[in-house]
Length: 234
Length: 289
Ligand SMILES: Nc1ncnc2c1ncn2[C@@H]1O[C@H](COP(=O)(O)OP(=O)(O)O)[C@@H](O)[C@H]1O
Ligand SMILES: [Mg+2]
Image (tube, rainbow over all chains, first blue to last red):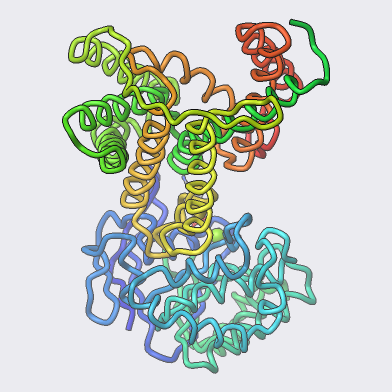
């Protein structure tokens, strides 16, 4: 579904990603793990077009992403839930969801999808008229995921959904991810919370200072001594 | 004349209210542009001036007033879009001072061009709607029409911004520009639409102002600083703030003018403005610095 080959990217003179090759198959939950500053956020930003790659090739279902203007990448079926959620704080929950359905193909299905995300996250329905900035952290994460689903994506990119949340809420957020996988979405998730994310992922890539160091079924990474020591503190 | 709570005072208060409608409309356009694009159109009142001349010449040339007004609105909407494409877009990432200088340059260019094209004469359409008298108070119909149309236009804009996809995108972009591509929103397109709307509002203000004011190349100097002051007082970029500030400032002008003299009204308004900005630099409703 998503294919990256030999992608380089950076900020100005600083190179943050080196020759990244990876793929995501339909129906999978794929995790990218790595410590702070490894380049996980940069990788997702490159895929969704927020940051242009400097070389390499990328495609979504055969459509070249590097030839697609950033605001049209969402039309290929990729929705990106950015790091820190980035809701529009002074818009209501429902307006945030509406802007998630901005693309023409999604506008036609707005009512239908709104009913679907409200069923998935009843909490959001209760708070539909509230300003997004007044939601709790966990609710904001729900709203950010729901906003992404409003475009009708095939692949959802999740950037550290558990970041900045209390431990109880973190467990709920990983439940949310399980739920959207059950709904048939393909997920590429980036996390520092390695122990939790490896429980829900089929496969994982290990990213270290901009390079992919390992790519294995999640179960094998969990079993690997090196990973346990470096990322799970065991 | 001294100040008493008599019928003339009430008349002044109500006339201030009527003036506030127009000033709120003018502030709305400038605030919308600033809130969304983060650029101050210092030449905003000069766009109004262009619109007034457009309507004047269209009407003198035989176009019925309502059609001429529509022409003025479209003309200035187009001018706003062109201003954005040609002047603002190249300096979007420049320092704010450079953006101010560029739109300041447009201000002087438009004034000079209007002087050359239309001369320095004061012109007016000579339309008299008359006035209504209520218990010894008198209000001109053109002011009442202006107030009603301005309020209606603001209501329509509010509905547009809160209900439609493009309207919500305009508000969203003012809150977080960077992630707009993730929503499938082309920032350049939204900027262009916003500029046309900002211009259209200036055009509408022009259509209302030709009913009351003489047209001359420097009319922007009469209104420009006032509009800018209202926007800053309310909090630059805050649509609600601009609306409230327009009412506050108009009342200062109207009441000060009725108690002392019109010049005093302006002086008191500017003094109040300076005091508020001293205490609250971000303006009454400004969240951001
Ligand atoms: N906007 C930016 N400008 C310059 N360097 C950046 C920027 N964002 C991230 N970086 C650098 O790129 C590297 C990768 O960052 P990031 O992708 O945010 O890592 P992660 O998400 O894995 O924590 C880091 O060294 C970081 O300092
Ligand atoms: Mg990150």
